[in-house]
Amino acid sequence: MDQPQVVFDPEAVEQLELSGFLSEVVARVRQRVIKRQREVPIAGLKALSAMQKRPLDLASALRHDRGLSLIVEIKRRSHHGKLLVEGRYEPDELARLYAGLGLQAIAVATEPHYYESELHHLTYVSKVVNIPVLRQDFVFDRYQVYESRAAGADGVILVAALLGEHRLWDLVSLTQRLRMTAIVQVETEEELSRALKTDPRVIGISNVDWRTLEVDLTKTTRLRKQIPDHTVVISMGGMRTPEDVALVYEAGVDAIMVGEVILLSPAPTETVHHLYSLIDSDPTNPTKD
Image (cartoon, rainbow, N blue to C red; front, side, top):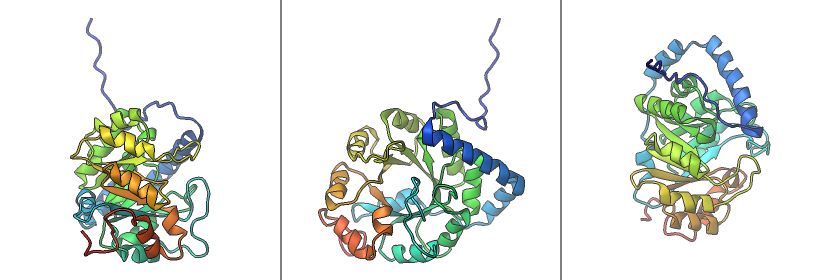
């Protein structure tokens, strides 16, 4: 007897072996998505998305002619609870300040429990800058992708550790249909293998372990060798010194994503100059090739 055909439902959450922090994340985000779906049906989000300006092309922005591109994260707290911005939190003002540094993109945290941030923070930022704005959150549902576009995002970060192969493929495909860019964030060889099957335009290599918060920049140097040249590669997190930046630059990445070291700096321009001081590249200097 013929076996019944198995039809994949991308809306069904695939069973991954999640534990600790990531398991807690999925449980919290799932409940939040269900609540938002009741408040704003997906049809309303699609209508809002159609009213937004065309998304900016992140991949092209990162492959500019001046060397190592820079993405700055804007968030009130790190995901492990460290306060990064004291007093009044004004992400749009921070975005204006950082955009003036000459960086190529901004990643805005929108998760309320861990980052103490909201989706409307992204909308504020998207209205005051003319560079790609990314949603930094724990995205695992189609609803969140439409929600991101409706809020003005040019792209989203997809954490491979949260997404099985089929769901990751589905979300990458959806971002492409919406003319957005997905950064597929990976940390291990297994996650990279899963990510490459979706043929993403941009891959982000996370240097920070979700569980221990330990930084290992050799993840970038090791995984970069396994990524095709046509894919834009970002080294994400953990870079605090000029030596750190030089290490990932020599590995051949197109961009770095930096958050804490700039958010905590009283002089961000000088901080960027310092981070880039050992390489022949500086996003704050438009005349330097």
